[in-house]
Image (cartoon, rainbow, N blue to C red):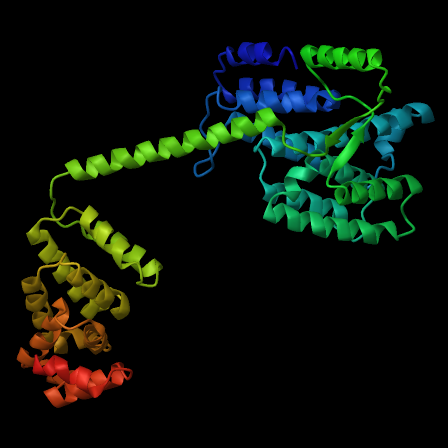
Length: 459
């Protein structure tokens, strides 16, 4: 650990010109992490420090994500996990390669150590925010049920215990992780009742169950990797205790799976940095918008604004108004926008609900000129017969507009709807008279009192 900073600086100083070279660095770190599980935390810290120091390379195929240091490393971790066999029984190839039983047993033991080291490395990557809760939960679920089987092999349970001990406290402190821990504890209690597991594995499951019930606090009889300064500090502490006549402790107390303090500080700083970057980007975008001159109508941009409004079930009126203002339309372009929305409603390009609610909301916010609204609505009413040839249900546009108009407060800017309906000579195909109009309003808005409806016609 003492040399970590120096090694990171040396590795980051290497110029990597292609993916093959970055793969070589990753192979070195990953192989060392599996061969020296005692230093898994240190190698995970190394990955955390190096991930932003190397360049990213274009994907192999179009549409795939870029190949980064972190992504390539995680692919190695996944490949090693997928090599986990269904059984630890020696294969025929291994038996031929190691004819002596002692050599064969040693090979199997080394293979198992490698799998457990990978579990520990996975746990430390999760603690450093390099793996998501979703990925860890998926791995745990597959292990406790076995790969394609209902009863996992013993080495699967060993892997579960190794991984959970590495991340237990941190995983248990998140809502999604807590659900997984509760599920896992129930599953382990059930598995302990099965006869297929040895006493060793059953005791290992019991230890994990008790560890969780103790709040993940455990005794450590074997030290983890420490810096020289930490070793000296502990030696000095022991010396002071000895001089004071205190009894020597042969173990330390630690929280299993707690995120290291220095990692938590890095994650917090990273989040603050990203928030600051987003804020700066937002401010820059707002400044560009403010400086941008008024423009002509961009129909594609207008459709996008209306689609956002539709995604919110036409309830985000303030957001719609802000997005529409962001288009920076001239007065003439705003009139063109009104024309496009009305015509698109009648022709069926826009759904009646979306189109009419957008019209009413933008009219109330005084973002569409009334003259343009009246003109283009009347024009479409006069051409109702032509519209019906392509869109037989285009009269629903009028019904929707009437319903929205009636629900608006007195003095509303959408009174133009009734004015146009009264003045339009060809609107008889939809609402032929004021009497019919009153009936249509009463049908669309049954909660309104007759006196309230009549107010519209007396205005």
